[in-house]
Length: 232
Ligand code: 13P
Image (cartoon, rainbow, N blue to C red; front, top):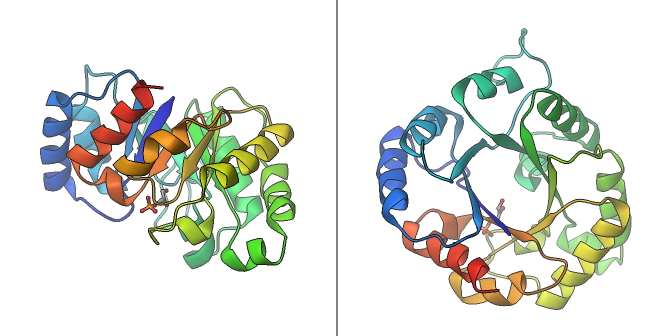
């Protein structure tokens, strides 16, 4: 069971330091735990979580190791920092920053080749679900992802992200099974995972963990979700 916290654009180095010190002292149970701070806070998180089982991943990564790509960060730079992996293809990047299936694939392949683990996000919008296109969208997004032992997929239905509207356990189970029929990889669920719905979602057979947004920003709620994974 893998529980990853995607902090999005929250927590600079000072808040990251405070969070990591508190997290070190907290009980997280037996789940594999990853935190994904913004780029500027990665070094602090790596330093302060050193010697623990908690890993640190970035929220995005470029495909080249260096070059004229203003604003981007390369896989080798992340490796140099001691970062364990990177999220790619989050729906917020697809929605607001022009990310496409092709660029997601390039990021994933380069990160894996550099020795990073990858959490690749897929998921349909509300309109796509209502139009009965969920499987078509998932098939298209999955078709470009490489087969690799270090690749984890996160199913994040866009309509459930930051909305407080969670997929029902059955919706998650069905989507995860479908994704697994396309690629043999662990699949995390993401979209309004909270301490009070975590056990039910994580209890579905095809759900291998969670990618948590809002509830990962407080140590109490994040560790409650990690502990929920332990009791299954
Ligand atoms: P929320 O948990 O805030 O809905 O965010 C989910 C998400 O986007 C994680 O990557």
